[in-house]
Amino acid sequence: MRLRALLETEALGLRLLGGEDELERTVRGVMTTDLRDPSRYLSGGELVLTGLAWRREPEDSERFVRILAAAGVAGLAAGEAEWGAAPEDLVLACA
Image 1 (cartoon, helix red, strand yellow):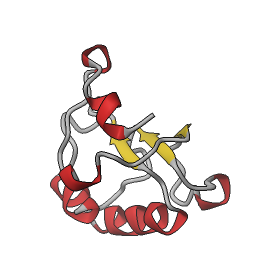
Image 2 (spheres, one colour; image 1 turned 180 degrees about the vertical axis):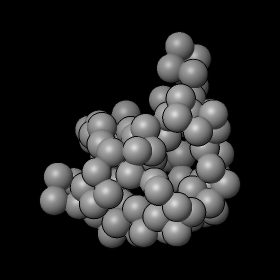
Image 3 (cartoon, one colour; image 1 turned 30 degrees about the vertical axis):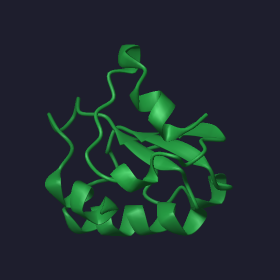
């Protein structure tokens, strides 16, 4: 499945915050995590779902996204329950 297809599925309630040029990435699996470093559980192509419990300060976002990028994940979906919205530092780190 492509990221674009997930975003177009209204029932999921997803909202794109960046990466418009990456929507053709293939999602090969889904991983839910709030680990600060989930790299040993990633093999590439995952859509990572997180509630952001790993984030204690803004600098944590850059580190977390760097780990995901190195693992070759397809995308990141962040829940808004804890913070009310995706923190701007996370959006910037993803960019």
